[in-house]
Length: 185
Image 1 (cartoon, rainbow, N blue to C red):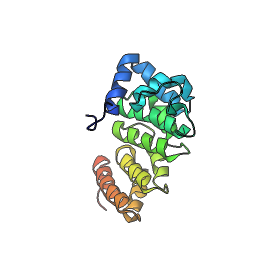
Image 2 (tube, rainbow, N blue to C red; image 1 turned 135 degrees about the horizontal axis):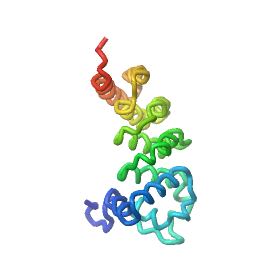
Image 3 (cartoon, rainbow, N blue to C red; image 1 turned 30 degrees about the vertical axis):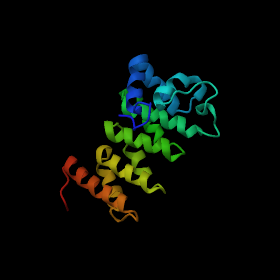
């Protein structure tokens, strides 16, 4: 539900409506293209659905000084968070290596929600990110997508400087132990 006094629908609703309107294959292609860095001008109509805003030519979404390019990549990934298609797997794996934390963090969320194949190593690399929120999301992702070689990465974060990361690492380690049938030794 939209916040009180807001005439905008929740972004998850506008994203789902966009996918219904243009079809899932086209929706996935748009999100993958945006995540890869496609020019925003190519997708002004689609960005309305992906952001929940009514952008028009000349509006702020086209203003690179206001909405940096990493936002466009993040919106592409966020679309996949709400409407997933396995055809986007390679783009999400690549997105984990994005130079800006926002698209990479969104790809971690997608990977964790949908158990996206091949994302364990990218999540492990992000587990050492400077921002605690990214580290926490990375170990959360590893709980779902990690394998035995990632257990040490998660274990190391039990002593992270940030309490949120430590809490998430403890949860992730318990999930990994259960999921991978590891004993407690």
